[in-house]
Every structure is written in structure tokens, then in C-alpha cells.
Image (cartoon, rainbow over the protein chains, first blue to last red):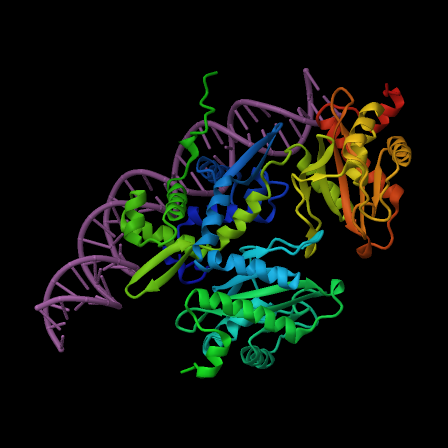
Length: 276
Length: 276
DNA sequence: TTTGAGTGTTCTGTTATACAGAATTTAATT
DNA sequence: AATTAAATTCTGTATAACAGAACACTCAAA
């Protein structure tokens, strides 16, 4: 009776709807090859007939596409999701104003530029401009990334109240990703203070070995950090990186976006001693 | 006989799931300003309490984001949809029959696998399965690539009549891309003969420095090469590559697709002495 | 401060519905 | 033809989803 093996908040959660969304998430993981009814049933823990019903509903609404391969069937994400994803990304008002600046940043640095927001404590990239070159950053749009080991994440954390940071950390934790990942809260707080002071954050192989990121926060009218900008590069491709110079460049571009949306620049914030 | 094989298969449709998807579609329409519970209930034709339950479920899974604005609430599409849309987009316009094999080839070699066709004499990739890892091959889908310095291009050229090859070369030429690019027609003819003989082609830094590709042709019913398969890797990442073994693997996977579409394998073609 | 109008949220009984498992069909392989 | 292995359909039952009403907010005006 009192079987609550899920977070307490979803008292009003609908089981079949939750399962349907699980199907989409499962297909999002294994999208390349597609999945069969049996695989999906196994993945989300329901019977084949239930999975079948869920899929029929999703197909009827265009959220899932199916294709026969003889007697078997391959299910994968439908085109409606492309549209919704596009809408969701453009939903975040900043993405439109930021795109040109993102492009300028990419051209100025020659590195892949990304724009991210904080979602449920995680960093989520909502736009990207790839650097030219044959090898690209893995497509990470819309995926939740750990905030404590990414440049955008740290730029965002550096500008929110300490108690909220503490809350987030206790919920998400500081999982180790590489041997350079900051796993001690005190060390992270220190790094966030440094980030806030100089106006840019650095992720030097803290999330992926060989990958360097530099980020900076974007402020809205009230001085709150609502988004962050970053550049990413393979360290192997760039032996000589002047962090101070690169950080200043990223910060300057972030400031440009802040001004476009009526917010203060990093300099203005520091001058005013803006915290209250 | 008069079965309803029309898409409208609402016999197995789940009402609550359908309504949840309606909510997403409705939010996709009115995304800019966001919607309230009452507006959503009105839009999809359910009671406020039902709309509330649907939203709670969607929020719990990240498909919808909510934000308080005083006593009211704004509901918008969530970031999970950005991710799913990104994934769905990468699924479009792929050859269904080849995709599973492409995936197997990637798993067998650990390298990015691609499927390409010949279009107006150029090689054009129509599907791709990326190798795991943070850095990926640049998204080259649908872009015309020079046939004389790519693995897929050479595999395709090796199986078409010599006079057509000559025509193509005179039209496109053999532009130099790297210091290893084959720029002399006689040398290329030689390389194509070798490719046809062993059943796989090699592009060793002929198009991009540091990048190695191995390809093999796919045959349709009549024995004509209609497409080609290839794997791509950064040589830096893989010091020890046994070309003969890798070539055999690529060839075997190409043969599998050939068989799926009713065409001959490389072995069958060579046995029959099928060239004319 | 009080009132009222507009929200979002919780509660509850009832019916329809979503569910698992078994039965059936379909296609590919031998 | 026989044998898999998959998708699809069927069916009875428990229960989950539903609408409506009651409750709890927040904001603005009196």
C-alpha cells in the first residue's frame, strides 16, 4: 500500500504517462540503432503488451517513428521531437540574442563556443557553434552536465547564493570524473570565489581528459547570473594557451550579451560591489 | 482483408499518455510566453486537476519546466526535449537496412562508420554511426566530398567502368588536399585496381592530415556498386592498425548489407569474374 | 487591514482504463 | 515443412485516472 519508491513530490504522477516518457528517454539513449518492442519493454520494466500500447500512442502523435525490417520492427524518436526540441531551445530567450555573439566568440578563439543555463542544479547547453575542423565536440545539447566540473557550471554556481550552492551540492554531490575533478566542497567554494573575482571559470581536464574549457557568466537586469558562455578545446591541438587572455575574451563576449539583455557587465558588478 | 492499417490505430492508444503529448504540443505552439494550468486545461480539453497531474508527471521527467511568477505559474517545454530533438534529428534520412550493420561495424572496429553514395561524381555521406568518445568526426552528412581522396569515393570509383572514371576525373580533377593526395590519373587508376582486387580502399591522410579511412563497396542485385561503407579514425588515437584485418572487417560488413538488399558479396563477384 | 477575484493545489468516489499474461499471428531460418 | 522468435491481439481484473468540489494561496483594490 505505502509503496513510495519514488521521490515524494510526484504524488500526482500518472504511471502510464511516466512510462511513456521513459520510453522516449530510452530511445534517446539507444537512438542510432533503434529498439524493438521487447528491448523497450525490458528497458523500462513493463510487459511487451504494455510497451506496445505505449508505442502505439507515441506513434499516433508523431513522437516515435517505426520501420519494418522484415518480421521485426525498429522504433526510434519521431520528427515531432525535433520540432519541440527546437522550440524548447529557442524558448530560452537568450539563445536568439546570444547566437551571433557565440559565433563571434568561436571566430575570435577558434574554439567551439557553447551557451548553457542551470536546470535543476545541472548545467544544460542550449546552443553551440562548432569550431572548424574535422573533429568536433560530441553533441551534448540539452543533456544535463555536472556543474562542479564544467566551465559553464562553475560560472553559474559562482554567482548564486552560497546556501543554494550547498543545497545543490548535497543533492547532486561532486562525483569524480577525472583525477583533476574537484571533489571536496571546500575546494570548490574556493574555486568559485576565484571564478567570481576574475570573471571567468576554468575547467582544465576536470570533466574529460585532454579537454580544456573556459567560461563566463551572463547577467540579467537584476544582476542575477542566468546563463553562461564557454569555449572548449582539445589541449593537444593547442599547446600554448594563455588562460588570462582567453578568459578575458570569453568574459568580454559574455558581457556583450549581458548588455544586450539590459544586464550589468562583470566590471559594473565589481565596481558597484553589487552583492546585498 | 480490409484491415485498418491506417495510422489511426487508437485501439491501443492510452488516453492519459495521449493527453500528456497534447500538452507538449500545446506548449510547443505557445512556447514564447509560457502557459498556465488553466490555459493548458482549456487547450487540450480536460479539467484543471487533470492538467495539473499531467504537468506534474511531465515536470518530474524534465519534459516541462515551471517557473513561479508570484501566485501564478508559467509552464514551458523542458530541456530534456532539446536533447531528444537533437537525437531525433540525427536519425532522419538514414538508410534503415544499413543502420544496424553500420552500428555493428562501429562496434567491431571502435571507429566512426559511414555510409555514402556517389552523386554527380562526388562521394556523399548519407548516414553515420559515431564511435564513442568526446570528439567526433565533423558532421559531413550530405556534403559533397572529393572521390579521389576518400575511402568511400575510391571504393565507388573502383567498381564503375573505366571510361566513366576518366570522364569524372576530367570534370572534377584531382585537387591536392595533403602531400599524400594522389594527383596523377595513372596512379589513381592503379590504386583503384588494387582496391577492386582486395575489396577495400584506403585513405591514409590523403584528405586530412592525421586521419585514416578504410572503405568497401556495397552491391545491388545487378552487381553494381551503389554505395560504400567506411570507418574513420584519428591515427594519433590508434597507433597500431592492421590494415589487412581492418579492411577485411569493413568488407565483411559491406557484404552483409549487399546480401540484405539482394546483391552479391565481394567473394561472389570475384569468383564469377563479373567485371565486363 | 479587509475583501475579493484570480490563481494553483488537494481531496474523494466512481468508472473507465491501463495492465500482465496468454493466445494468436507474422516473418525469417532451417 | 518445421522451427524459431518476434510482433500483435485478446481478455478479466485491479486500480489508476478522472472531474468536480473544496481548499490554499497571491495580488490588488477598498
